[in-house]
Amino acid sequence: VQLQASGGGLVLPGGSLRLSCTAVGSIFTIHDMAWYRRAPGKQRELVATITSGGSTNYVDSVKGRFSISRDNAKNTVYLQMNSLKPEDTAVYYCNARITRRTTMIVGDYWGQGTQVTVSS
Image (cartoon, rainbow, N blue to C red; front, side, top):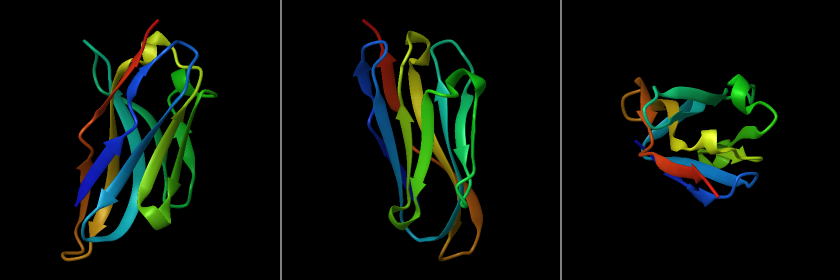
């Protein structure tokens, strides 16, 4: 099982980006999915989570600006980021708790990280 993330880039302050992350492989069930970020010189931070039923949570600093969603048919989680600020600059990582079809074992999986830079 792998998570494949995409969608990062360079954007002006106030701009928008949408990150995508697709789980591929021998998947039985995808449980909670999430986005984390690590800014330069800082610890990794949980940005947003979404349950299999669609319930969401956000870190205070992104509430009202970011939106997490998922398409269960495509095994994909999204992070829509609006009104971006320079302090949102970070490497963003997707995370998913997945039950593998072959073993029926639940594990935590991580995407490779995608760089988001907000700068004028």
